[in-house]
Image (cartoon, rainbow, N blue to C red; front, side):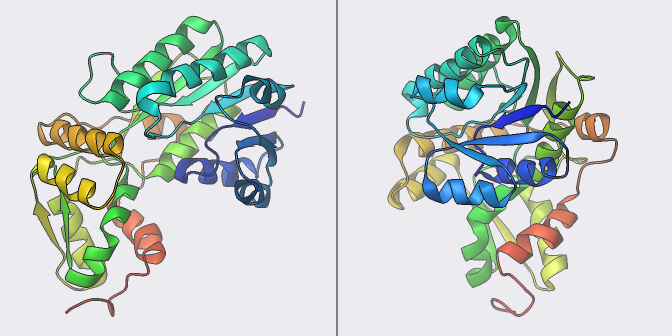
Length: 300
C-alpha cells in the first residue's frame, strides 16, 4: 500500500532533510506550504505542495485528506506566544477528524508545563493534547541544534571568534539531520509508537569544545567568548530581532548555562540503528560548506 504522509514546516532545516529522505521511500509525501516559493522548494524535493495555514482550518482539512501519518513541525515565531498552542491544536483537530492514524511530533527539549522558556511550555501543551487525542504518536524532543552555529558564521569568518550565553556548560548537541532521520524511521515503522524520545548527540559538549573542533578543521585558532544571557538579549534586540524570539533565546541560554541540557541519550542509535553524527562530522560536512568557511578565510 502506498501510504500518504503530510509534513508541516517542510521548508525548514529539519523539514527539508526529512523530505530528501522520504523521497527515497514508496510513500506519497505531501507538504503544507504558505507561499509559491516554498511550493517550488518542496516540489523540487519530490513532495506534493499543498497551500495552507495553521490558522485556516478548511485548508488543514484539505491537506489532511487521505493522510495516514502527519509529521508535525512548528517553528518558534513571535506569534507563538499567543497562537502556537491554538494553531497546533487546530492541526491536531483536523488530523483527528480527517482520520489521520499517526502523528510524529518534533517537539522541544524537556517539554514541560513548568519549563524555563515559553517555547518549552507551549510544546508541552501540544504534547499533552496529542497524547490525549487517541491517535498513534511518536514525540521527538531534540537537544540544542548543532546548526545554531550558523548564527556565528560572520564573526568566525571576520574575527575568528564567536559568542553565546551558555558559559562553559556542556550540552547534548544534535545535528538536525539526525533529528530528521529519526522522524523518517518513526514514520516508516510503528515500532516506536507511544514513545517520547529526548534526541541528543553522542557527547555532551561545551562551546569551548566546538571552538576546538572548528580550529582543527579550519587550521586556525577559533575562540569562543562566553557572554551573559542578558548580553545576548541586549545584542540581538539591538540587531532588530523580535522581542519574543529574543526572550526565549535569553531564557534558553540561562537554562543551558545552568546545566539543563547536559545529558545524552541513545535515541538516535535506538531509532536509526547507528550512532549520532559527531560535531566534527557536522563541521566538515555542513557548517564549513554552507557557511563558505575555509582555511583561507579570515585572519590567520
